[in-house]
Length: 360
Image (tube, rainbow, N blue to C red; front, side, top):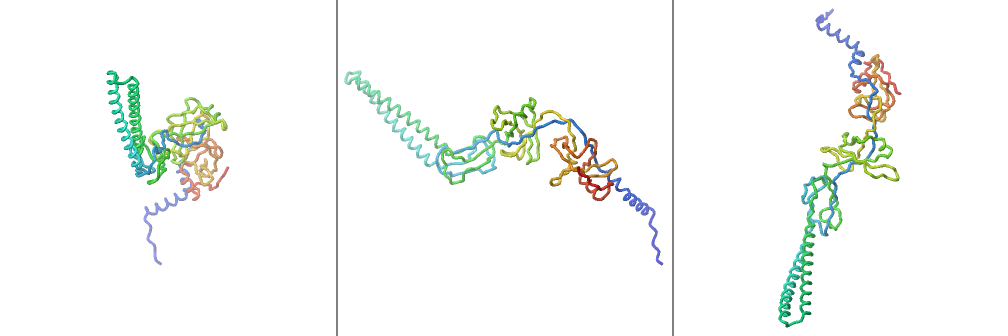
């Protein structure tokens, strides 16, 4: 018979240690989970109101003269500086108007010079008693009328030059192009929108708040603005309650100024304002312990015996820096796993005592 070599003593000891660790696995795995206690805490009581983001400075630039658009130097999303040319309208018609006005000025000035010479001649003749005073009155009237014609012609020329300046459209302030309403080659008409700009440095959220809730807010009103699309919540720089109410809905608009430097925020974005009404005692669970699976929300509870149990929860609002309010499913003092993925792994492997799933 063939004999087997004897295992070294160190290797034999390591094998026994591995078997012992596997046998003691459930207790060790459960104790390795990091947990936190669910507790009743004094937190701020808030009211949430929905609204949209708008720009404090927003302008829709329209054409002030008629003509074909021959240059369009911007597109949606472009940043522009104050005074930057964003579009040009064909200036040929405006140039002809300016030339006509200048010719009328020259004609009026020539007529004025002629009437002045006639007035001076008539005045001398009157002093020499060669013509009557009536002739001098007529010469004076003609001279005054010529001067008025020159003033009118010069005003028309200035207006023509101003109209020619309208063929160049410049940005009134530095900002971002949020909309372009025309294409190259289209005809521009006075009042026709060309582009819309907004200043990204000055943004605010405008929300609608019932009058009853406004009465419960303490002055000065503190609020935060939640931007669900970006997953951010920031403190409002300033809160302004508009001094007007909707007679039909009995609500009032409130403006919440946003801090500068927010990335990805633009007018029209959905926002939610959270107003502090006071303090209240709420049952709080750490946000990292909350698990959301489709329409089910829950947490993995670690019992005093070391068992892991999945508990379905009904939760309230999330409180940044504090946790999530629990409305049902947990009791004060219970401990929950802070790493739901690890807790699920232990539960499936049966490494944490009972694998029972409970739902309240």
